[in-house]
Image (tube, rainbow, N blue to C red):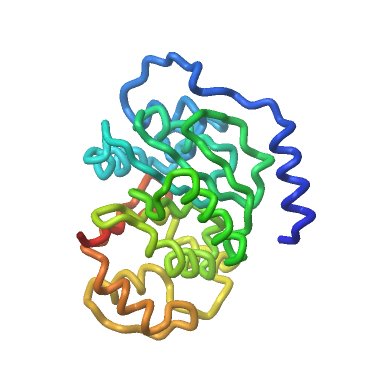
Length: 248
């Protein structure tokens, strides 16, 4: 993605009138209610199309329980219109959410607790520049939770794990949505490298594996710093999600 395209999308984002969720006084209790209300496909019912959603909300609810009523920071990679960021912001009331997306012109929500950054996560210079902005703002350089809901391309999932898992706070979570898309769809299997389910199996068994992206040093770091990996299947045939807990 070239600079001019990103710049144009940033202008469109700045010009767009957004929905300020800080003014919403909705009487919702469950995370699934929030995902549905704001239009996230993580809900059991995807509001926009009135069809089944991925149904990830029950898994999120379980793993996020320990973070409720705490001041935490979430980095979301791939935010699209901001539906899940809005839902998480209202459900976890003390949370600040930082959204990385290549096309922020789609973003329709705003909040004092949501910060939006338009960038290509494959551009390491841009990633580091924006991470510095977050550190300057919060005085911290780690996140309690990082969610990868980006392109679902194998190369991006592997590169994101390599780059961002290091930024998860000890005891925090790294979440990969739709991690088996490269198994199901050829267009997501865009590099000749290890599939994510195979990577998970090797990490759990503390085995090294062949990868052009996750090198031996990266693998040692993952093996030494991952406490547990749990995988779940949602509502749809391609609804797969994994929760990686970082060791303390």
